[in-house]
Amino acid sequence: MWADFLHRAIMQSIPLLYGSTGEILTEKSGNLNLGIPGIMYVGGIGGVIGAFLYEQNASSFHPVLAVLITLLSSMLASLLMGLLYCFLTITLRANQNVTGLALTTFGVGIGNFFGGSLMKIVGSDMPTINLNLTSSCFRTQFPFANDLGWFGQIFLSHSFLAYFAVILAIAVSLMLNKSRIGLHLRAVGEDPAAADAAGIKVEKYKYIATCVGSMAAGLGGLYYVMDYANGVWSNDGFGDRGWLAIALVIFSIWRPDLSIFGSILFGGLYIIHNYIRDLDVSGQELFKMIPYVVTILFLIISSNNGRRMSKAPASLGLPYFREQR
Image (tube, rainbow, N blue to C red):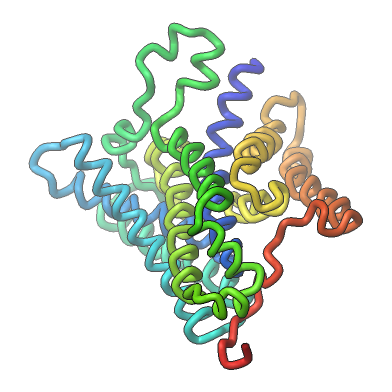
């Protein structure tokens, strides 16, 4: 039972890890993108559209081509959302909080619109879209995982997107702390005026970090559809995973490497109600609140300890006006 719980906790954690890694990268540049839930949603529907068009029009199904088309479609859709956020907040200097919340609403609306359109095209009796062929390619596992008992079930029975999420989090962490690009990016997030005076192109770093972070978050939405949901798209099916990813950023004190373990913790807390007997619906909803309660408690503790625990960039959420430098 415990092996099954850990396996499902890791599966639940992957969308959160993608979302938190993307948001950490974005926030390190000083941008607070509360549109991550909407971007994850658009990344999911973008992959669904790409997979649907390929399955419907391909004369013969090629697994590698199906995966590449789906990945590119998802990343392109989430990139467009990131560019929209950047244009509004960096170029036009709109309020980041309002823009992010509007982007979340817009992303969910876009996803539901295209999802509903695809359902009408296939004439499905159920309000879902099934992409079993493409999903089976994404859910390919190590063939020897079942021969290694609990170790194989927990650590080796996941898809390539799950392992890439961990690799991406580690790579972003190393980039932020060990490279010149990371140093410049952190300088932009801490004091953009000083970074600008030092010759660092502030807007360029903000654009790139936010767009790359959006694409990473979009992959979280794609993983949920193609792996966790077995290729089944249903409108409003993501739940509150996008908001959990944002909460995870705070819990992991803006460190992508710590978010690996934090995402597994959040994923376990999110599904633990399924392993408690005789629990009614209201009790299940209370247990789903635990990750948010943990984050609130951590915020209280970190606020009492000041900068020792808080690693948020100093200019997070603040627009940069070069004319006032």
